[in-house]
Image 1 (cartoon, rainbow, N blue to C red):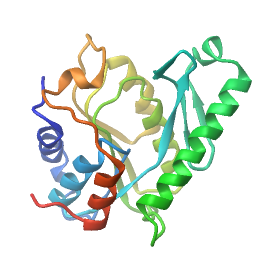
Image 2 (image 1 turned 90 degrees about the vertical axis):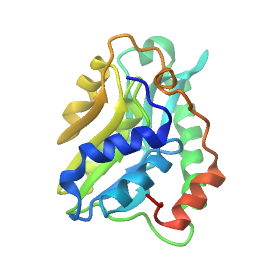
Image 3 (image 1 turned 135 degrees about the horizontal axis):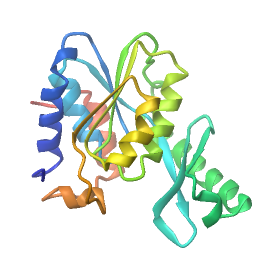
Image 4 (image 1 turned 90 degrees about the horizontal axis):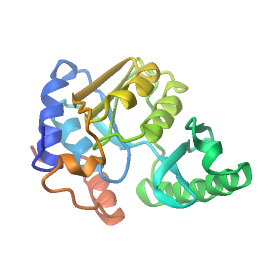
Length: 211
């Protein structure tokens, strides 16, 4: 399955999630690419939208490869190969770098209000696709501690082994396609542009998207 763009993927995910419409779900995006998708899904389900901030920990020689992830609280998930690729000192330094990025982004994204509270709510965590799944795992772990009524991972695409890793952290996983041949999320989109911080800020200020 190939998606035209993130809007196409968001439309298809919203259809799969229609049973939550009218229950005021909280749709949380992992920035930056998932924010426009979460805006659409929240509007389609008559819910609210916000971001959940997590960051991947980058491999020393390959910044595109995640060796783990960290959430805003500092909780860290490490892939089983992390210590083979990076020492504990590197991981500690990389963790601090990513925590600083999250502090700066939180100040940018929600400067006049705290994050929306997921307690007692249906929470849908959206990303534009999963590769290693590390950032989604960190997001789900962070949100589980805040006592949602139900915690759902919703993504257009992920490899089967990643879905196996993520599933224990969610009450439900919604994934549109899980191809065995997987190299990068972008290969499943015809149009997959970068999303800027300015675009994220504008979307969050708008509060909702037009369907």
